[in-house]
Image 1: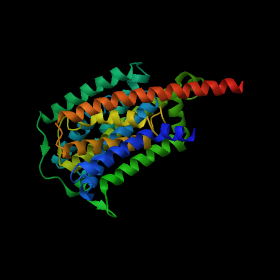
Image 2: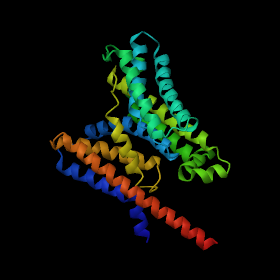
Image 3: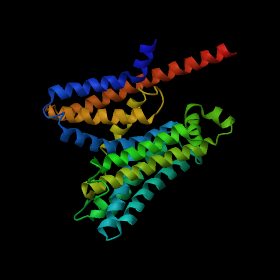
Image 4: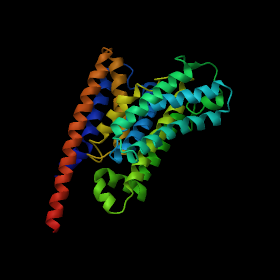
Length: 323
């Protein structure tokens, strides 16, 4: 039974480790420090935006606008930087753009009663159009202030700056969900909204918080992307969309099966990035990554649903025994 519980909680992580070992043996240069450092930095962008999606999903809401909102926030940041604004103002504008989009999503879902699937798709369309209106389809490129690019480049104590930002975001999200009353209310809202409401939890506020944080972390991702690439363009974060969803869903198959969790999301994000890197080093066709990603999404949803049904059955059985 103990081994079975270990496999239920960490089986996916173990499988991911085996995949990494496979690439370490078969893919040239995969296990070199430089390549692993590159994977870890690429993971930072994906993991930060995925943590935002996980926070929204923790309240049982989907944010399908995260990639377009991140692209718009990057464009706003780039427009101000290229216009000569102070880097601090540009960063604040990028973060504010993401937060505003998230709050609009929350208002649409809780006040206007629009399903989050529809509300966030609408927000994504608005963000995409606004980004093209600002840039006229031309990316912002050129010389960017070192004070701005330093946010994503360089290192501190030998650790890349992007990794520090990831640790800060992930740590704050984990503390929120596990060590605060607000986080517990968010999880209760996501697991049983009506029961949470009857218990006095302001479920609407929790949903607005989850979606607002998802938008804010899309803004954080945007600022770091722009600082890392020294460019900003509409759609620049679109490649992160499916990977972010896959990271959260795959993360729900480990650590806390059936529930969005930060630890599982981080492990899944790194595994997905390592998988893509390994396939490239093995000269796999470009479309292989998309096929594998689709299989991962389908498989993780099936495993998460099974875990949720098992958890619900266990809770029901324990309740019956208690009564």
